[in-house]
Image (cartoon, rainbow, N blue to C red):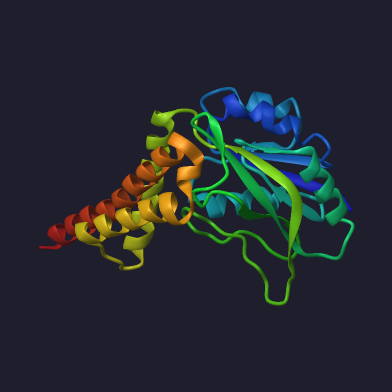
Length: 254
């Protein structure tokens, strides 16, 4: 059964070539760009003619839906530019698409600050990425979008890892964290949710203890400690952003 590898991208020139090199076995590669200012599209066109641009950004979920709509094959493999499909995972995918339709998860192994993170709640980070094109798609969430699992559809596991080169450096982490915090708070505010600074502190402390102690982040060395601390900070920022957003909105109504 033919398969389409699908990517949504923006300013991913530093990652894209290495990612697409691990997808050349796919029957089709689909790349949807959100308005890159580097040579992302030029690199993508070295691998496929199915490259398009849509700058009307409405969130990750909608963008994935748009990208999938451009795929022509029966199976979808959704991949991010900072990910790499290992040979073992590729072989598992090729075997899976010969079977009856199902949704498949891959185990994602992340490289962060100089090492692969095998604890801290990061591994195995199973993500749903292989699925039948005609039977499901991602939801419309602004951030942290999820693949919809239809009732009665089996969810199975693939062998092999999906390597994830998640952050280039600390600045990249902080920029990405700020972006997700803003998107998260926007989504929660739109749902009528509120937050307090106290809840941000509580959730931040809980995040650190969960990652570093309960999820054995200490086994990831200094990187594990740094990630737990940064994650706690990012968690606090989400609630702080929501607190600021709702107070500002209330003040404007007075």
